[in-house]
Length: 122
Image (cartoon, rainbow, N blue to C red):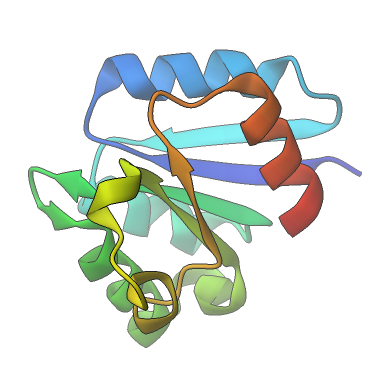
């Protein structure tokens, strides 16, 4: 059974890059969303195993989107593991726990880190 991954990032280049990396990992099905609205639609349509969320987007922060997911529970995805993507310096002590993230991935995303995150959290 394939692992379902949703990547939320307002950068088309980042979404493409992460999708291409994920395609190299066996048994991974990947969807992407350009922002909050598209993410909410995709989340309502499918239960994901892992959600990757950009820390800063045009519509708001990754933490704001995570709160929306936790409160509105689209498609039953409030319990789905979520990882924030950005720069390590953006994530102060307690940031991950306070915002419902299990970890972060440093941008630009490296293949081995993405593969490890998928393996660990799905």
